[in-house]
Amino acid sequence: MTSHVSTEATAEGTPAAPDRSALQQVLDRATAPGGAPGAVVDVRDGHGAWFGSAGVSDTGTGEKRRPSDRFRIGSTTKAFTATLVLQLAAEGRLSLDDTIEQWLPGMVAGNGYDGRAITIRQLLNHTSGIFNYGNDAEFFKKGIGAAWFEHRYDTYTPAQLIRIGLATPAPFAPGDAFLYSNTNYFLAALIVEKITGGTLAEALTQRIVHPLGLADTYLPGTEPTIQGPCTRHYSTLFASDAQPEIHDATDMNQSFAWAAGGIISTTGDLQRFFGALLQGHLLPAEQQQEMFTTVDTTGPVPWIPGTRYGLGVFSWALPSGATVWGNAGATYGSWTCAMGSRDGKHLLTGQVNGDWSGLGVLDEILSTEFGAAAGG
Image (cartoon, rainbow, N blue to C red; front, side):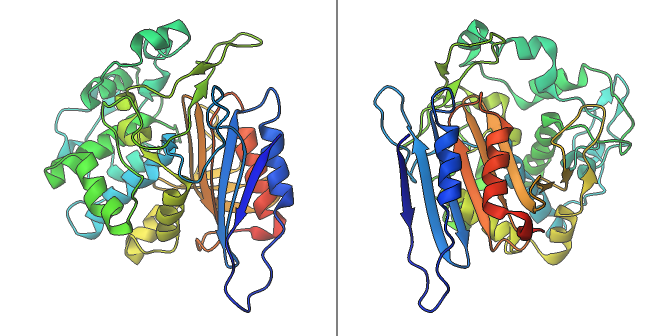
């Protein structure tokens, strides 16, 4: 399998950059026949930057993966949404202990739900007990196989998706357990819009994208194509066949993901954002502490083993013994991660442009880079 590696010179007098041949081998294995079409990682630490890639961006043309490739980052989006909420908290415009009812009167009620008993903090750390609209059986069916092609350009409003989530009765009382739910982040984003008086995309641009100079990061709304240079996104469309057909799922309306998983970015922009976030440059100390205060992720629906969830970020104790912090996400044709040391000085961002390779590839990439000595 072909691969491409580029390195950046380190500052004069610093030790030699680490040997990342083992990490390159992980990328090569991940993109071997039967694996993902392509994979990229961008690593930055005290030695400088390293970019590694393997496989292709486009299986039709054979074009290689590039650092400039834009891609859909899935639930890595949640870190951006949570940051906006916490910035508003720092400005005294909301409290994490405010209830949903205070900001969105009447939106969460009935079927075992009570917006007067659910706080903004519980939305952000997934302890609200609100069901994930994405796991609604009828909604999920629209994203499988041939049905995906019928519905790939459908537009959903946040209110529609929240109603789908609330149609399933509350599985537990607020604060009693952890249940990963995109519905939580739609509600949190509506509160951001209520307070700022603009759209979530505008808040994202004004408060994060422009200040950090994230030239390749945006929330596309209902636009189905990815602007600028991008990798193609290849998906099995959740087919259950032993050897499922692979489809190009690059173009789709991601209004169904929005504040929970809709952002488009690059490995470089994710480096800049998560570096600033982990190093405390985006939030004051009080809100930073809130963001990184975590809850157990074992609950009625199993989540990633070894994780604890904060407010839009999580810690992951890897099999290697290292603990990394950040976020990760998946959507059709894309797995993304942005994880690193708690101080943000050693950070890996990466993307795999095939969704059947699963979380295991990210696990191996992170374990190889961070090793047992890199803990939290």
